[in-house]
Length: 230
Image 1 (cartoon, rainbow, N blue to C red):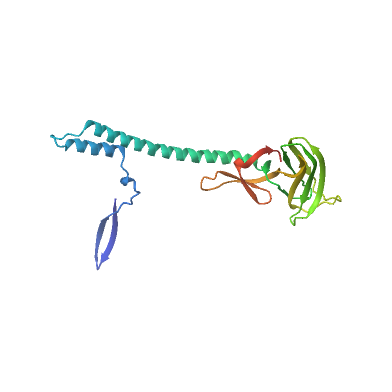
Image 2 (cartoon, one colour; image 1 turned 45 degrees about the vertical axis):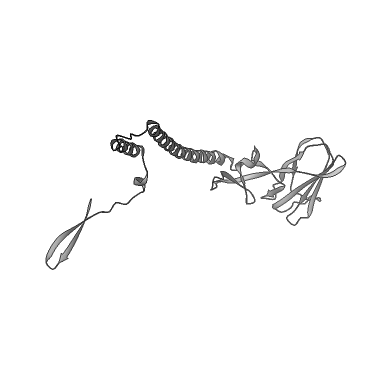
């Protein structure tokens, strides 16, 4: 295609034709399969008759190129497959929005005064004089719940959001600490907390799907222990 430019000099008009310079996309720098065979054919046509190309060497060249070309195509297909899988996971994870997920930790969030905090105490051995303490953001104990002796296994709990006097506490983050006597020694027991899923996002650098929880907390999808209802 030519670029036509009309110019005026005095009373004369003339057309200036200049060839359009194509924009390179870099594809011509890639050695394709047909380029390789063209080079191989040229090599055979111009070989020294007294020193013909060794068959084993020629086969090795063809095998090396075929292997490299196959790996390149496989990488492209795998990249496309990985992108498709990530998009599919994000679509499936979007169904978690509005639901509750159980995650390891001891921090729970109350969005309103009517909400409580629930979760699971992970108890591997029999625990005596087991006690749940709820702490506010300042680190003060606002509620103590005695649950006595507990057999090994997960122990479900649900705090209603009130203090020791029955007063409803304001919304916000609260910490759950559990302690019991295990084999005669005071032992801190780990917990997992139920959190609501507000949104789902796709992180970069191959980090996978991220769940954005209530209270401005984000976790990876694989960190979810259990999925419950809202």
